[in-house]
Length: 92
Picture 1: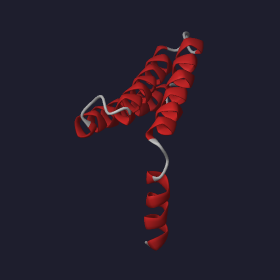
Picture 2: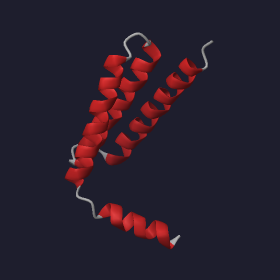
Picture 3: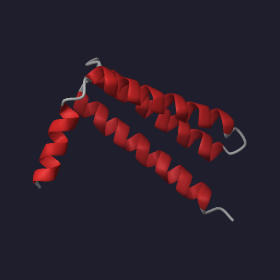
Picture 4: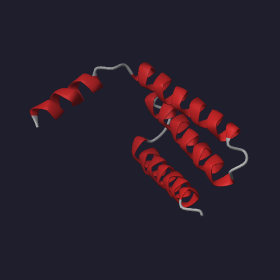
């Protein structure tokens, strides 16, 4: 457990601006994948949803939104994206 405590302290030391950049980059990559997967609607929407979560996380790190409510919304969007990818992968 001490390892996880140390990891949490190390991650807490990272400035919010760096986390915002990380999440913004993940959002841009997700939107790019969504653009490239135009032929598969489920994959496209899954990447769009994941991109939206990246944008929401960026707002969290800039202190612009309620952290708890946003976390719930992000979790739901990631879960729906996961379901869309799973459904698409199981198609025959």
